[in-house]
Length: 426
Image (cartoon, rainbow, N blue to C red; front, side, top):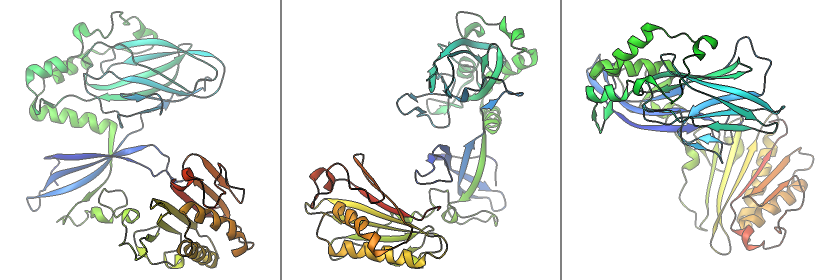
């Protein structure tokens, strides 16, 4: 394939599903769809690549005795309520105003020093943060003079001037301005750093020898040369910086490919084109209900969990209540050794309840858990029932928030209900 990308169609921010136990709920990368020329056939092919940021945070080596700092990150669009950066992946240019975030463990009150260093080892900012004993997160945006010098920046956290940890972030050069390839006068304006190479009114040059951050003349001269790059040379510079901070996890083809080792996007588990049977609904039945039974993979099943593979079966129903409002129910049955009979019995009882009960979805869900102990004696099932934000039931305890009435209260009737049963240890 040609190493050059002709057009980036769209990025995708992907996160692990909230129901996954093997994958934390954190940013996993971007899906980028692009065109590339197959050099063997000279034909244009559309590819999709999963790119992921490399690990930027690292603890000092040897480790410091100060252990409260758990993580640090630099980004923009900090959401203090959700405690996350809305700019996933930290995509930043020379005109951005980055924010430094730190996550802390419990401990005594302490003061730490944060030092920002630009790609030429110029200390752009330094400040102290008082960390309370109960503090979990801190964030601060230093008032840096713009534009920021493109390249890889370093932020160090010090305790009593001893290194604790550091993180890196990328300021990406601008290859385009106003939807056109950037001109040289604009590159010199955006890529040369702030006026007089001073990010703040106060100068921190005296801290370079104290922090053992030498300023090399070669780095400064290279930065000046890169500031005037345009065209293909500028794109190569951008590519080299991206490779330093990002990695390509996998790649696939959206259509037929002449490359024999190129996998099809429809056969991957990560692509935007990979099958998602959970969002595929069948036609409604005569009674108005829509039901779907799926296994852990991509094959649709009828109504027998034992036919849905060896690991997990999902049953989802959209059940109209007395007011015509559709409530959603879900039964997740996880199977380990010798549980095929329990799977079948649980699903059959569940479906029978749905078919015969004229009550709302919430009442059906409650009755199922209330009756299942008699239907499945000594089965070892543990039960968790949740409905919106107002009620939770564990095991066979009575429903909270007045949901034991038959029919239930209005606020219960309109809630989306998820019923799940799992085998212990799975």
